[in-house]
Length: 367
Image (tube, rainbow, N blue to C red; front, top):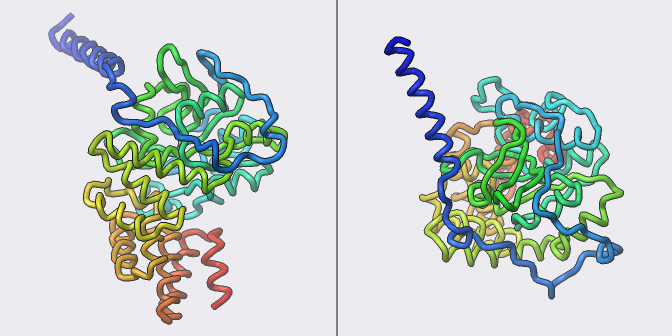
């Protein structure tokens, strides 16, 4: 074997050893960074028969098995993940069909294409295909274990990688308590990926631990029983706020404070939402507001229109031109200021970048 081949073999061996060592590196204890989901048993309950539905106790490990895996095209993790979710129930819908509906403005290299599928959009499109779906914040490892142990995969919104700022959908299909790992299928990185609990929570935390469950009508009572009193969305956001406040005190991580901003928006605490955001805005990843608009919506609610327009301009001119939801907000601001022509132009841009975006179509009809 010549020297060149020896060097190549040593390089590959070193790379494999390095990857193995990194994968098996010691993680900090979960409690140094994360707080388990807090459930207030005294506020609200699930309705109907869900209280009496049997929920299987999670065993030491679960793997729901193979999905019809779909590797995503550029920026198409939402449609690809929904395609796999529907496929779990035997419903074959290609990611192309879903992508053409969910984010019709697509550019092959991702330059100023539609980059964001919001969780409410994901839920709405799942329902369009005849299934039930629900999104809630404040999930945790126990939530994922309960759903998968009862035969229901869970979609989560996370960062693509740690120390990254790209949002990403994943399907959680199991866990192994002995190994302390979550098992998931990933439209970008492939099926049967294992993440340590610590690494998974690190990716999930920036999105207030939001999760989506797609299910059949026959599974409704089971889903309600697992979610419990957080079927009441206000309760879910109250619990999210308390949990985020506790996590804020653990590290100098900015994400718990951002999660407080999001929770405060949904609880109607707009002033607090803005204050939370502005206290850590300089430390947030560049793309944070590409995926979560709540601080801007809070500013709109309080009539802080200069801030709304400045932030939206920065986003639109910073690599995310095809952002229909932002054009909608800008149009509503112009309307509030009495500038109908400028409002119409913004609503038209919203429809240009998403012909299925109903709020802008409705706004144009009213004009």
